[in-house]
Length: 410
Ligand code: KIV
Image (cartoon, rainbow, N blue to C red; front, side, top):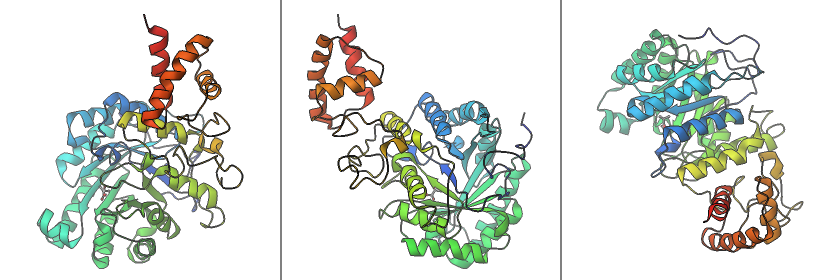
């Protein structure tokens, strides 16, 4: 039931695994639905995951890691649903995202991932095993030779199922021995891996070091010229965006990120920070790097993830934080709000808060499609103020709830 490989003429260069047509094109791999969902308290329903996947596709991400199919029946179903729907919605330019499922290095996980993603036009299995001395000794209780053998066999096994796009991650690469990394990566390339992802699993590296790691892997791994190198940076020291960009400058052409930077502990590199830095500075400062992201969908996607996960974006968060822009328009603003799809709701700010007046409230409600009588607006205004006192930032979802309470009150 798989479609033939993507046609040669597509909007982006990466749809045929291994083919690198544009050396400066950086693939954006979004793992909000997998790694992001591992944030404590962020669990999503299947319907919410499908909505987010549709939105990620509008945003133009290249690869959606839709979940970890062997983790639970629900996860499996959500990945399968996304593969069937979002993974088949090819647009007029031939764009359709790759749909990826995570698996540990064992046959059951790999087979289950394949059963979930195989419905997509561009399915990918992402398999991983730990390679740092501490993980191999205490978590896996395996020798280096055993770990290489398992990794090689599982990549081969994934390919044998009919999956021609297989990603491999040496977990905790940031703390792994270099020579061992070159060796295991060389072996999985021979076994058929098409993307090699280098995770800084515990967010321990600093940018110079992480960039050097990518450069060393590029220089020393046999067969590396035929595959894509990827980054996956956790944010434990607050360096995930900087590390990711250092990786890109050193030759990585896939960057793993999440919306709003959500993820376990301090989270992951945030899509909006990485993408907007490449957009603002890529041409001159980052050697001409560029992505295929439609940045005007960033704000909407951020809000959707915020509302569905309940993980609020801090007001000072770069790019998508409510206070991040506009107040010092012209003097301090380096990105236009419209670039990421923010509406300018009033002269003072982008998002409504406790200082917003009736005029700003009416305008935003009109933008959301509500035309209210003066009396209704007055009643909503005072309840809006009460919400703003508590939440600081009143979202569109809050406004919709206020309107429906007002309109449907007996
Ligand atoms: O942080 C990590 O090491 C991961 C891998 C599975 C890529 O999430």
